[in-house]
Length: 369
Image (cartoon, rainbow, N blue to C red):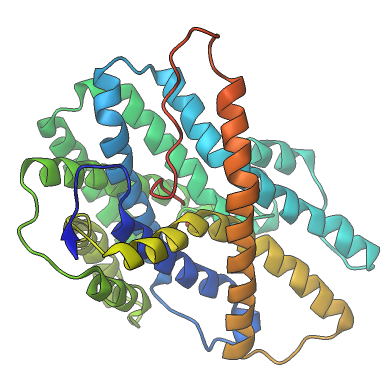
């Protein structure tokens, strides 16, 4: 274990994001594991995703904005980083509809009022699928809020002094606490009914990540905790069984406002050894693709089960599905996402003599739940 140097790769963050993504997958494939891999608090992984996003974005772009990086250049780089995987998840999800119809199954209509906004990473606001904002690939909702926070950061970064960050945290923290108690948990943001809660979740957690980065820069965390201990600690927080009611609201609020930022302060101060770095980078690199393709691939599998018979759900079946989708996610990230992003970066340069734009971040860039 070594202290984290000032560089772009944060392997401990990668490992934690990989673990969090796996728990989110478990949350969305209950029919496969028949509830045997259900983890009640796993939706709080979204707070970690947003928190780590703020940290990594601040680390990568604070100085670049000081050196003259423009807002629209930043927008371009972020879209190049996030959209290719989003697009492949969207295509897989939408393709399940004609597949189901060929098998004579009833499905949602391919409504342009749904398809066009979602294709553009925008939420829908029509009466469809019980109010889901991204009905064909529900986990996509976090990408919208991720980009909102990214773009707000880019607009205000030149005025984002430490006192301003503190004010943002106080205001957004109060907003988040209100949302947790008003909606009785932080499992919110993906439906029209609690859409506003997504803003509460992302603005506090993202700017808390920015604050953790600046604190780490000014005063590195003096406490060293092995990344191999941080991984199970993260799991424990995300699998905790908390009863609904006041306990649930207090737990979610405490995790988001206090525990997770402190956890990030610890996690961004240490890194695993060389072997751990390779393993953590592998998990972090595949986590974004895993997050955005598991639901549509699960939908395809469910369609086949409806037609040919559903096997009995079990932990083994759930684990097998996760293993297969994780391999597919790794292949998608390596052989689709990287080449496409490299190509998009090349064709969007401003001219033959223009300086190269900042490269889209790799494994340590935010995902998104």
